[in-house]
Length: 375
Image (cartoon, rainbow, N blue to C red; front, side, top):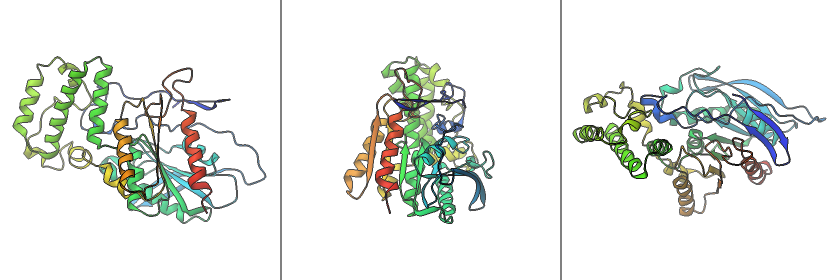
């Protein structure tokens, strides 16, 4: 991935090309994993000022997540001290170690561990073989590794995640008291199924469909997916699909990634765990992030872009705020950035396509308040 870095008065400017797949290019059952095909990861380098302290170091590391060996890079700040640290969690799809964000955190005085996802780069295993929720355990294994190091402050290790990683970060914190903080970027506050229905609806809007057609198509998709998840209502689902073939929006919906009008599996076929969509419909689609948010008891920063077309931003912000209002013990900070997309890139003006410097500034200031100065 190409990246441009320039220093200007307004701050660091980063240009990252859009790499969302075109409509119809990702066919079939794994369409539920569109989230985070807009990674902020890249291979950019930062210039670091010379200092008498030991220079910033990057160390190749390996750690075990149960029987799987994962490989990554630990990026350390310059100062000789025990550093706070962050583990970088992946978005969906085959993602390698995110050295751009790791180096950015390093420049803020925070050590960062970026690793290759299971089955990607130098890591073993296969991320496609487990529900995405299980991948939070890999992040926790990375924290276990960091706790063994004398140059890391074991009490100040947190997680950062974009998109699907925005689900995984709070999930990791809900599962372990070893997680000291969470930074969730573009993390949906709804289930993966609802998130994907929003994604496909926005895709239809971009294709020029009317709002009434989008609502009708979305209702069909929700009904069919509910059948595929529960196995109840086969005849009704089959009838709905047949009737929809006469709709004016049929061609556009048929061309979308989830192959909605493909062969409808019978209840008997759905009960077999080896059918192609079992993991998505039976294990992933209905994951509810709200109980996870309720279980988070550490400082957490939730960041969204109001031009995000992949997730329902208003509903996601509201979900975090509702959980925070339920219990005053939650230390949540929520920020929505105007004109930013799913990857926190600006969508308007001269700087369109560049990472919003206000987004990076917000993380930096929040770290200073909640993490770096904590004993």
